[in-house]
View 1 (cartoon, chains in turn orange, cyan):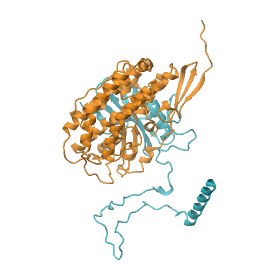
View 2 (spheres, chains in turn red, green):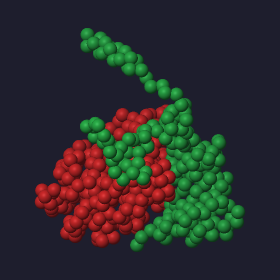
View 3 (cartoon, chains in turn red, cyan):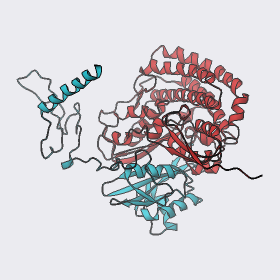
View 4 (cartoon, helix red, strand yellow):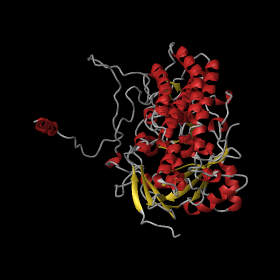
Length: 368
Length: 218
């Protein structure tokens, strides 16, 4: 029997398409239903933040970091503040560091709720799991609102600490949430891990090999999904992460399903960290006073954290002036896309959409 | 366990052992090589058993006005250390060989540097603009992008609440009730010609807009 070939034709997925999670365009060339070439087109959300940041002071740049990964504003704040503190040699009070850890971990849970919810949505478990996960995310956003007044673009961290201490009504609310969430995560596992829809769509789809993952600089759940236990929180502890006991969940096959379960398990580990941090939370000031116009000594600094999407780093260069001479973001969503073409070529369109969903990209962070 | 940042001289020693004349500058935390040598050095850093720079953390360009630096932040996941390699390129028509063959993760980042900084990477498989469209004038992250004549820099050089150098208190202001804020110099040096738009010009624009608004309502 001879194989039937059709002339290759091009299909645009996006930029306005629910499966691309933002204004992201994937141009796929098809032979029948099989993808033979995939090319991404970026820049629909490019705001030139790196240039804008060169005209603003170190403190004025914090709100930009909210608007990069807008689903994880706290970790964006944290990475930038750590880089600026490294450049200027500023120490953060202990209570400030603990609050940073608590909010970063809550943000990780919220971001993973979104990532997993939309991922199973892409797989065909339409809307119900997403709405369940939004219910939990909502409670976390309530905690943010209680503390800093904003839910999405929080602008909460400052160079030298955090902007506000938590209010009194925050403690019972977070204790209730920490007590409630493990049951919720168990409920998701019960609902989803044996789901035929999810397994059939994501098992052995978009398999990434560990060597390729390292060579392509991938990070976060994408790297851990292929079995490499690399987490910046463990490997290079920032803030006070070395004081907490938690595990790094890893996958085995490196397929879409592994990335999904790594994220589910990370939510549980984040809860463990929040629980321990709440028990150890010391008193005292939450931030150290920093001059309005911070002028770090000339030099360069690269600081990185484990954001929900992967390794988020800021490379700052100072020339001694009040504004950064160079402000570069190592954006995990952007660099994780390096493997997208290799993962999707050979798949069908439906599987490519599941693969893209499992990468958990955020276009605000890709285009910056 | 914390990641160790290898000192520049330590890395430079290893590089010099393999490439005696490649290192042109060593600082406390980085090693600089000329742009044309970067691929050979990069491959050495990746495959060397001791340095083991298998993971490219990030790649960026810095415009130093007289030259460009391409910064490669590298790390070893097995040994948990990190170090910085820099490649130096001339400011006029900068070309750097692509390290895409050494680390696949450089592909997108080099396209970003090409797009925003205007550094060309030879042997790159797909060197096209990535965020801006083809035909966009200039490269925004260069320091001379939209350079204004006379070295004029927009914005405040000092901040309203910040005292000028050497001054410790607000100056005494006599014969007025106005709040005595320090005089803030707006410019290092004023622009050559004062071409501020005349108030009459602004006044004309406003009725234009309102008239158009009325037309739309009708």
